[in-house]
Image (cartoon, rainbow, N blue to C red; front, side, top):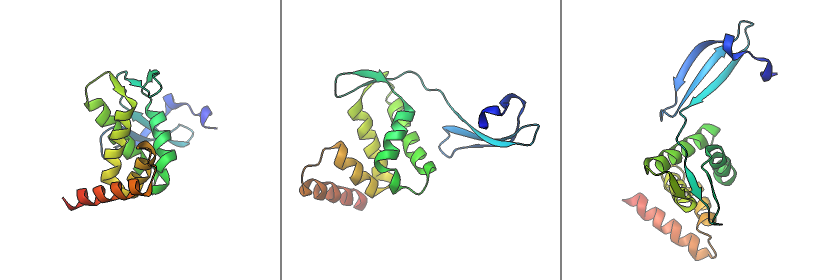
Length: 151
């Protein structure tokens, strides 16, 4: 049904910028009284990702969102919290000021953000990203995270 909405004739009822300033949420209404929400995001410049396999591909924010949601999304209370993590990662990646990046650098940026916002999601993601093989790997990452928290 959403495909039948004529956005051009709609009026904006309310606009809100996300706390991190990366997106604008607009509540709209059509002349027929149907309400809907649109989201506007700043278009970022092209960024090439060098994969472990040797392949190169365009950075895709939606692919990053899907990966984070699949790997650690259940450790967050809402989709907006996951969106916030992804927005912070995207900001870190683009703040490097380069037009090419290694996939492992993106993984490292995810780890840095997760370490700040959710310690369980951090350990879960670290276990896959850093390819934990033993319980000692888990103990080491938990120990280092506890030491960081004490600082």
